Amino acid sequence: MSLQVQLLPTSSGDHTQSQPLTTYRVNRTIAIDAGSLGFALSGVELATIEHVVLTHSHLDHTASLPIAIDSAFTHLTRPMRVYAAAPTLAAVRKHLFNDEIWVDFSQFKIPGTDQPCLEWVEMPPRQSIVLDGVRILPIPVTHPVPTVGLIVQTESASVVFTSDTWKTDEIWAEAAKLPNLKAVFVECSFPDEMEKLARDSGHLTPRLVAEEAAKLGRQVPIYCVHLKPSMREKLQQQLAPYADRGIAPAEIGKIYAWP
Image (cartoon, rainbow, N blue to C red; front, side, top):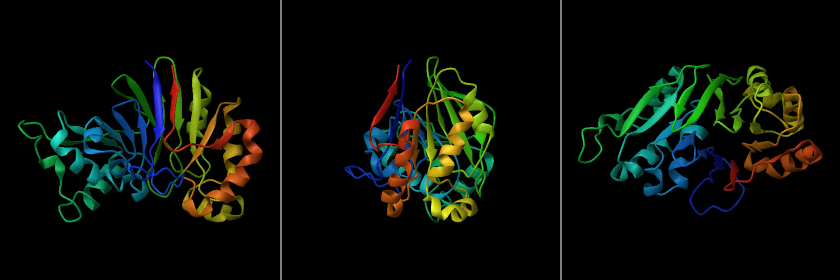
């Protein structure tokens, strides 16, 4: 089966390349993170997202999950399942789906059925799960809250998502072993002159992205995401010299596909 990845826009109809929120759509039925998920897709489209994999609890990666399940509710034919490490699930349930900020949709049934419309599924680090033919391996990375990057694989292609991270080793070491690695989506939040802030907040700069990518030992496309909108122009300028190494900003809305 093919592997398709789309970095969703902040909201439906937003054709800018501004990215304050993070969600990837993988093939037809999987979302990675939910920062913009509920804002970028219609209710009918959201009902096709059967699996939502959260890398961590920060709001730019979870903000629209309550809106997503609410919009999909009347269109669902099977539960929307949310996968994450135990600390992330606990934080999202306590702070978002707490019946004060938003109702706990796991207590609701899909209309006309006895199935819950939302299910919480623990995803322990370093243990693979298989979702609709796609294998996903969560690997811990370096961020102020428990966070995992993801190795996403089909039989013919592998793609790595570092999620939010400062310098880290394990996910790059695992990525280097993949014979069919097609791309890495890596965060790049701050310009080089803000490296201290990047370190303190668990993020990367263009120079550090290049250093991290070198751990692969070979060149594959490195797509930079999570560019802070107010700093996007500066980040693009600082990433430009690394284009010959295959490092460049990801295009929001583009469908990246590998057979």
